[in-house]
Amino acid sequence: MSIRESLLALLAAGPRHGYQLRGEFEAATGGVWPLNVGQVYTTLERLERDGLVAGGEPDAEGRRLFALTPAGRAAIDGFMRTPGGRDAPSRDGLMMKVLIAVAAPGVDALEVIGAERSSRMAALQERRRGAREAGLNGDLAPRLALDALVALTESELRWLDLCEERILAAARTSPDTPEES
Image (tube, rainbow, N blue to C red; front, side, top):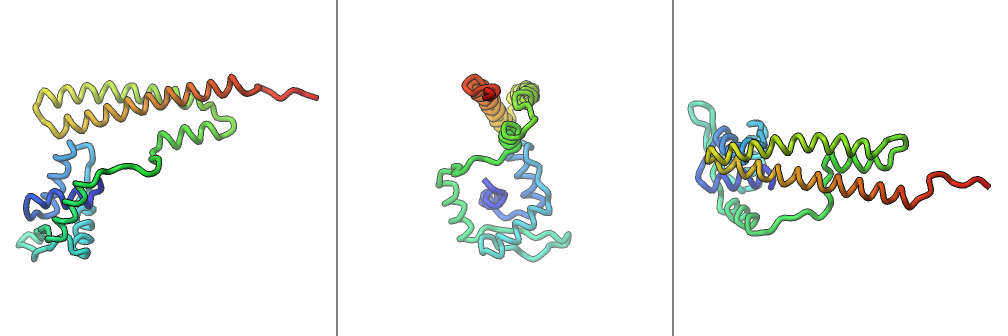
């Protein structure tokens, strides 16, 4: 979900100015996605240009309230009812790093995978601890955000294990050095 759709969804509760939207966005995402207020206002201006929100006149403090238009409500309703998905693999840093390590001469891909695995294991422990603490505090959004990060980290660890298995299997099936004639 992009910032665009997030802001439209938050505006469904009623008119807001950018600082309010920023705070509500960060609360809704459990604080795991900090948002620059400049990005909020830039996005609101684009939404206004596209007819999805209407901005009011600035108040005494220079803040403008933005409200959903009927087109904006239809856009967010349609977005929320349409299942999401990924058509192409993500270009996340971990995947790119491992793929390049496998292809680059002189790089020990298994060493790269080992270092990434160690880093992910430490992150997983920290995220699990954070999720438990958030659950004790009764804060649902941070708990769900941390649960998502735990699941993502577990998935990354499974993928790293699979990469290691495939690299080792490929090494077993290919000759170490060509025989001399």
